[in-house]
Length: 196
Image (cartoon, rainbow, N blue to C red; front, side, top):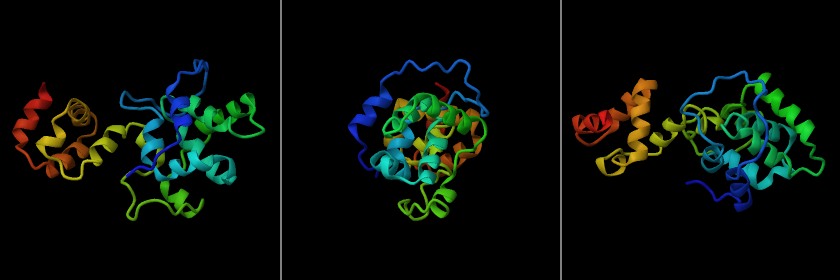
């Protein structure tokens, strides 16, 4: 279960910021399934620690957080919000670091965060996501689907899950097939709902 995150951060992240991103370089591809930073901030144990302790984290922990958070659709604003907590915050310097994270660095994955950064708070066996940004990038739908341990008609038959499944059926067939293999209801009925 996700730990609570600070209300101030939720309000900052869900409030629109007028940061111009038109000419920002990107070295990764945006997908229609990408989501906001709040998904990784509420679902990833590492990102929860980052929110609660950002000022006292090591450089490696901060860098691991920023390389992930900037990939969300609102990640640039979220990164600036978190970086602004630092006493020596400079918009210009932070923006340069964000650009570097977007163009020259990959998001640091969970294995690196556990082994090199030393984070011990992940659930045993992991959460099924390979990097914190996975909760917000392309795999947002997978993340929503993976939270359903035993898929039944009762917990699947809602617009959000049906919409996620319909997109996964088109974009991520292997993930969709795994889900259908675990589904305890009548598969033909679910398939009919997805066609709608």
